[in-house]
Length: 74
Image (tube, rainbow, N blue to C red; front, side, top):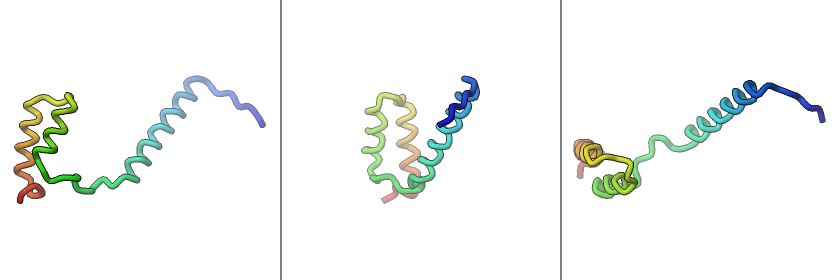
């Protein structure tokens, strides 16, 4: 086995590239265009609310947008 020495900067560049490639591979193998697991608008907005990451204004806007969507029409 031979040892190859590279600079820290080169190593960081290679590592960052590898992480980007792995991320893209993961995204491309997932089904990006699959429908949401539920058509219940309240379930969806409740799940967003429970994360604590989104403001009430955002959730209200999300709910309004989902109601306009033809996918969620009954």
